[in-house]
Image 1 (cartoon, rainbow, N blue to C red):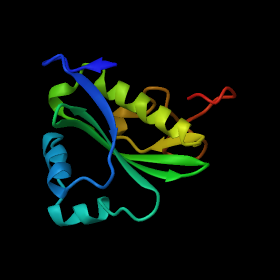
Image 2 (cartoon, rainbow, N blue to C red):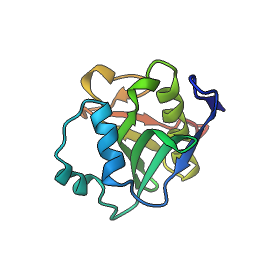
Image 3 (cartoon, rainbow, N blue to C red):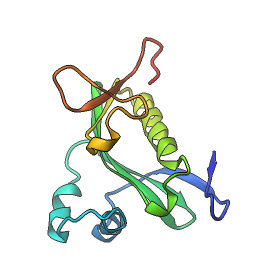
Image 4 (cartoon, one colour):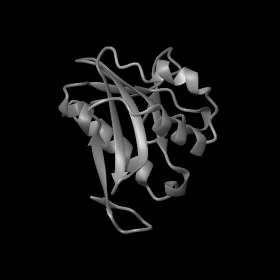
Length: 145
């Protein structure tokens, strides 16, 4: 379990039943100082295929969000991974990533791929793989990441 460092409320890992609203996603982009015209959010929010959105919730507030594109049994492509700036530096992003890895493992996926900003490359066990510029974290022989 992990607790909000400001309110001491429990932080919950949640699998969303549907895509987040444009407003929710826009608020995360604004908090991260990322610019994307609101009309382009339709492409990001496209839910065709095996996509899941996961969040970190404290009470009614979403403090983290990520999009998972599932390609069972091979891999999960992780994108739109964001933690609200207020929560940076408390280990919450690392905990969220571990929860996503466990979710993927339980779903039968063998690896998680992501394309982070250049300053996050080779972080938290993700390593550049082969000819790809995309870091990969794969399960080991025991089936764990």
